[in-house]
Amino acid sequence: MDAFLKYLAVFVTGGLLCVVAQILIDKTKLTSARILVLYVVTGVFLTAIGVYEKVVKIGRTGATIPLTGFGYALCKGVFKAIDEKGFIGILTGGVEAVASGIAMAIFFDLVASFVSKPKSKNS
Amino acid sequence: MNLEQKEYSKLVEKHSGKSNVFVNCLRAFLVGGIICVIAQIYNDILPFSEEVSKVHTTVFMVFFGALFTALNVYDNIGKFAGAGSIVPITGFANSIVSPAMEFRSEGRIMGVGAQMFVVAGPVLVYGISSTVVVGLIYFLLTR
Image (cartoon, rainbow over all chains, first blue to last red; front, side, top):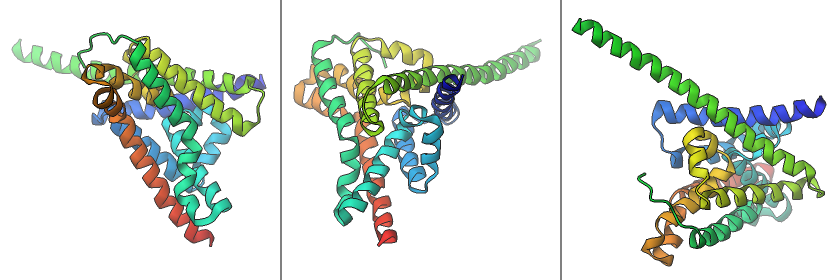
């Protein structure tokens, strides 16, 4: 039961973050690129003021997998690097924290784009 | 009669519009939630420490986001889920591989290589830039 509630928290947190974006898309006609940028910057900001850490405690991957979580990882990485290395951490911490995700995305996407055949798309 | 029809169509438009937003939100909620739960389950079965597991989970989700995009599955999920497929990190992977596939005909360098970042580029630019600003403030406050 306890485990069920924990996964429910993940589900609800992740779901709600997507609903906010869906409302923004339907009501404001923001493109998905703008939504993603907005989410990352919001994630950075909420992490900086200490709010997002609390959301992550409850929602776990429900908070870290949505793009706000990308901002969370960036911001946390910067703070950690500043604590450890001082000034230069401002520049190294963020990218270091998300390096694995970016390298994976770039490399696998490159491979995927070569081996797959795209369906003709109209969009 | 004409007026009635107009009013009727207005009424239909209003209601269908409303329920559409509601249905879209419900779908986004379901799919977004499920993607996060899958990530959590993978995270929980990993034998590593919490920090390392988190990185593995992100890589895992990026991998599958890219794989399902390459298999032309992710776009179909996206048609159903809307923001539910855009906001999770799998959507970030999708935003990279999808234009890369689409622009392959324009060559490997300026087609695939450049178009990959049509969505991911702005995300990285503003994400990283905002951390530099926030980091600078944090540095000044903690000295």
